[in-house]
Amino acid sequence: MLRVQWLITICALLCVYIPYGVYADTQLSTIPTARMNPQGTLSFKLETLDPFIHTSIGAQLMDSLYVQIRQSAEISSLRDSAEQLTPGLDFKLRLQKEGDLRPEIALGMNSALGHSHLASEYLTFSKRYKSFDFTGGMAWGKLGGAGHVKNPLGKFFSHFKKERPLNDQDDNSPDHWFTGDEIGFFGGLSYQTPWTPFSLNLDWSADRYAIEQNLVSDFNTPNPWSIGATLQVMDNASFHGAVVGGEKIMGRLVFDQNLAKSETKKTTESLPHRIRKGDKKNYVSKYRGLTGKQILLPERALYATRNSPAEMWHDLETKTPPPPSYFKTNTLFKPLQYRVKFEEKLSLSEEDTTVLFRSALLFDTVTETALGTLAGFGLRLNLDDNLDLDTPTPSTTLLTRNDERLFAQKRFAVDRASLSKNYSFKDVHTSLSIGYLEEMFAGLGGEILYRPYKKTYALGLEGWHVHRRDPTSNFNLKLLDNSDRWTGHINTYYELPNKNTTLHAKVGRYLGEDFGGTLALSHIFLNGINLTGSVTATNKDNQDVFGGTDNALWGLRATIPLKHKRLPKYLKKACCDIDFNITPLARDTGQTLKTPFPLYQTSESLSYRHLIQNWDDIRE
Image (cartoon, rainbow, N blue to C red):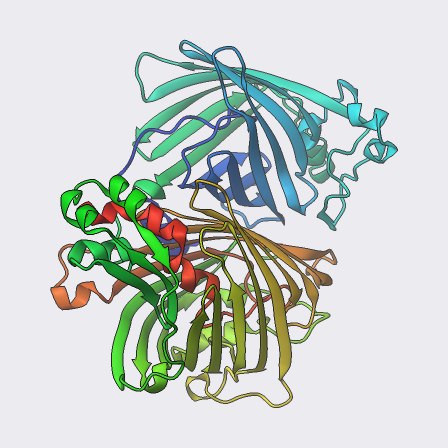
């Protein structure tokens, strides 16, 4: 059922770095806990409990927020193909940290978006006492099937009293959340044995397996109790097994990697890095045509406090530098970047294929040319994919990426070839681009971003007129007739205080001419890794092969700059990045253009937040 290709890719991604730490259990055998992993933890889980096998990839986006993309397959034997697939987006939000007397409390949802079969909502608490960790809580939906008491929310709003269907082919939605006439209570405990890698657990579930009985005519329903054990086989790998109700055996394999602690290739383009290398009294932050503030360093701070970045930060002054000429004429050819990037896309959101994947190698360059224009050029080498297993479905939008398998079949292609002009007017940044903008589209357009210095918000507007590229032409250079369209969005950004985390909301018209919005949460770690989770919903439905519909899609993305100590010096600058993207493939709804220079990301190195976060680079 699982393709060796993408399984090896995930394991390599999670295990390529030096293992870090031993992770606490964030769930018992059949019930959730309120526990969280450290921020930046990327997890791969494979779990089986008759009649389901669950495959999931999750990320601890914030200290208090865990998001997981899951594919659940109904399967009678490990040697058989799945009879039904039920993808979903799960999350858990910590409401309160554990204290001396108070428990840790979390609110979670299984299949908050996704198939409704396994949908549940729960409120759980956990409290540690010596070697014991106690957990209890209440659940709605599948996990609360025991129906111990009436739904307390129904006393306030009759909406929450409505029944939840057992066999609804449409996806779960906010209209279903916390509904049902009754809820159930669950509880359990975990015991950490004197041998650190080994722990035991006992739990009592409120799940009465109504979904399983509905799907499998002779399903042998287990009792609600379970006894299990967890063995930490490596620093970043564990195995959990349990006996469920005396009738079933469950198993869970987990790989964890804390990306925040991974050794990567840090950028040398940060302003603190430039200050460390020089001895000037003032520096102007510049990056790819954009201009930030001028940083003034008092002479005494520059020389007397070289080993105390904190003191230098308090002494520095900033001002707006004189605007440079819009059209520079002193540069004819200045290489800015050569990069090799490994791109891996996975989809766990299919209802006819367990996993779709696509692998490619990108060779990308950015060069500054005459008049300050940026020339970008990229070649794509498509390595492998299984998109031929995907069943095309009718779409209510224009053809956008539904035929992605045709692009993947082209071994070599021009990924992009464009000219861009970036320029800053004080706190306003602009970008104009024309050419082959990304793998599937060519055209022209631009973006404007207002990002005031020392503020935690930014506002932007973008618009593009594009044509689809022909996947059957040489290097995908030909444009398809009658394929032009407009796309554009209003963008808003908010930086969480004292964190390198950004909340991004956008609304507008997508490439399929559907209208909607996207909500994304991203975090940039000090080692340069960017971890992002996003949800998009539009006014057009995507129809699956079983007749169900949905108008939402979700994704997780990690971009990782790798560090290779053994490479020759001339190759270290070019190699390498990993772009690991878990998102639905070959879809037409909710699709955005991959622009050459997204202004918020491009202007990050000019921001006040970036200056503070990277200030310790001075003493490296």
